[in-house]
Amino acid sequence: MYRNAVLFFLSICVFSVASFGQGGASPVRILFFGDSLTAGLGLDSPEDAFPGLLEKKLSKQGWTVKSVNAGMSGDTSSGGLARLDWALSGGFDVFVLELGANDSMRGISPEQTERNLKEILSRVRKKNPQAKILLLGMRTFPNLGKEYRKKFESIFPKIAKEENLPLVPFFLDGVAGVKSLNQKDGIHPTAEGHTILANHLLPFFQKLLRKR
Image (tube, rainbow, N blue to C red; front, top):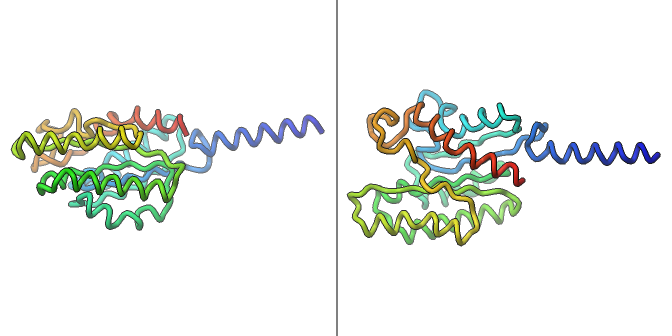
């Protein structure tokens, strides 16, 4: 009887570890919520965008994950807030927030962007208090002025500190401004650019998943 009890306990432990995404049957659902950069605008397939590439990379390393690409081209933080509840309805274990680039391109006040992003995070936590969240930082163009640029780029580290979130300081690091890694518009990454983004983000996800 003691032996059976031990075996039962061990089986629970194994199931618990597996259910948290390391080689288990229940995949960790990673919800990528963003704009055209997340959606993979201009690519042959959405699977070529960084969310799909990250799923493949993590799977090869033994993680059982499912990426959900909730990117919407043209989305501002206000647009994201408007469709958030629908996006969250499918369930998620990890939430990745990538919004703000279109806000800056449209000259939306950094204060408004900050309010919207904080409201998004508040709703995410209300929906799933146990979910892990990763915030992707963004920079903007110099032609918008030093003051605007300073305020906008300070949003992300400020939110990360206040909300106690892991932050990718500049999501497009290594890709932005590199002609060969971007499409003709000079804004949206090519398939090769998305591969670099996925490689850049991989350590952040490895760390997040280990903490679950």
